Image (cartoon, rainbow over all chains, first blue to last red; front, top):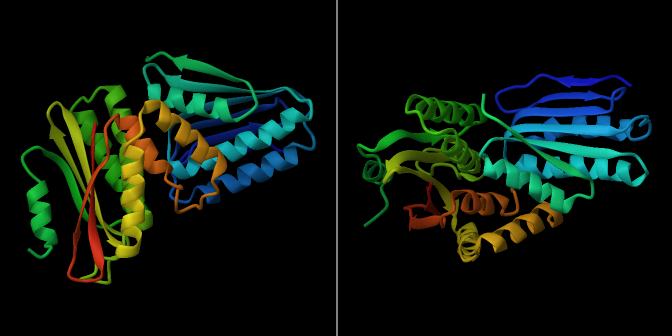
Amino acid sequence: MDTLIIESSPKTPKVVFDADKGELLLEGRSIPENSLEFYIPLMEWIEAYSHEVKTDIVVQMKLEYFNTSSSKCILDFFRKLEAISNRGNNVSVNWHFEEDDEDMMEAGEDYNAIVGIPFVMVEQKEA
Amino acid sequence: MSFNLNQWFSDNVNEDTLFYYKGSVSSKRVTDILEKIEAIMDEKNFPLKERKKILNILIELVQNLYHHGEKFEIDDAFKSYGCIVFNNENGGVKIISANFIKVEKLKIFTDYIDHTNSLDADELKVLYRKVLSNRHFSEKGGGGLGIINMIRKSGNKLKYCSQRTKGENFFLVLTVKI
């Protein structure tokens, strides 16, 4: 299955979904006015991938900001991963946040409380 | 006294104003406003933690104008009309956003703000998770998540006031202190 790569823009994150390695990365800002437009291709990729998972899946969430409309899309993304996990595959999420960014840490805790896959909270020290 | 947009603007823009905008709020304009305010915060050396909190709240407010701001009733050429004022205040900042809103939407919106303002931090967390996980909300509307987010992240009540305009709308002003 082809790796999904989308470069970042001022309002959308970088995406690298590597099926062979089981590594899914979202990095940057997710603040588009129309989040569905951005997330639909990601969901379609995950849907296709869900039928051919061969490795453990590790998600790297490295978001700097996300808006309300993205928050629902991100939850839908995690729900799809939860469904994969429920079929016996190992899925985990590394939720990265910058040092002292309590809001982003809380956002990770919110998803962790809602979705039945393990989250690891990764605090990034300032350079 | 009847509502006057220019008067409202001059009442709210003062020597503590770091940025202001009034006009049409297109997707590109949203980007421009966010970039300009980020540049101002960089220039003024706002601490990272504060800068992130402000930008998080600002994204909600500006995109709220983009999605919900009614046309400026004096001139139909404006779509999604809105105002943003970013002021220094007492060691923090105050963000004021304002837009025209139809009367039938006003009460629903302000009742929701009143309810959300009445909740403590733990109750806000519970409500946020409930709305995020249970409600089906559209691309345009966040089912109230934006309001919860702003109150939760700012740690302050969301203030509002409204004034009837000459036309069919109200002019709604939201104020967030951070």
